[in-house]
Image 1: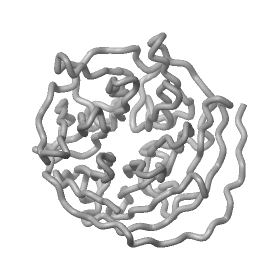
Image 2: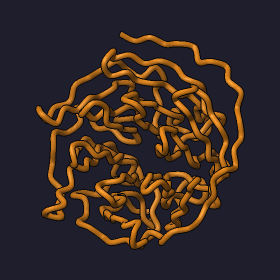
Image 3: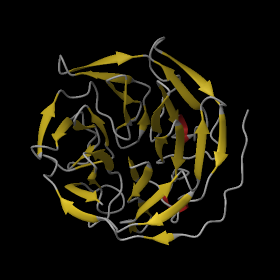
Length: 305
């Protein structure tokens, strides 16, 4: 069952309470990768490298030592492949291979004890540029597109106990290059686009797993796809994005408790296809493309209040 509620008309507020600094750069320039906090370290995997090729590299960052190290490569080259952590296990889900953006269905987990990746049940169909989050011990995958660049509206649910995927209520707004974050057991799907950055969205839709229902929330202040996001103190921070004539430095924050957005200090380096991860009360905004299309940077910028 699906229910769509009208979002409240809310006053947008601005804040400049936070500040930016730089951290150790990634060992190489990457875009279209994803990142996640796993234990006390930040992990990134895949992406498009400085030769404009899909890569298999994976790295982890130690915030205490401000240092990166390379870990075992993922089994095959991938980009636009979300990472999530469930039950102390890191999952890499779907994604694309090559610059023709061939969608893939593979799902891998990373074994820290072996420094190796292992296969888990594949997605029902190949799919990339999705977003994923963990709700009540299950992985929820939304958005993205598959073969023939067909946008996907099916919400997928992965149960680690059965190692199986099931379909849930479809997302109301079909889109790729979106972001998803979970706050208080609710998954929020934010922004994205229908394939082209010429038609970015500002839509925010919330998924209630128990009710298997989507509702509409307050729109993002700007229309952005190819953005990144992270949760800090119960609020969802969104960063960057891509448009046809450049990239965004926007930093906009959503508070689920009030269904309201605020505008924070922009990123020092505008970019798209980046990742954002919260660790030790700070948000690390990692790599990405400093111009529209194929471009890579290894910059890591850190925001904290």
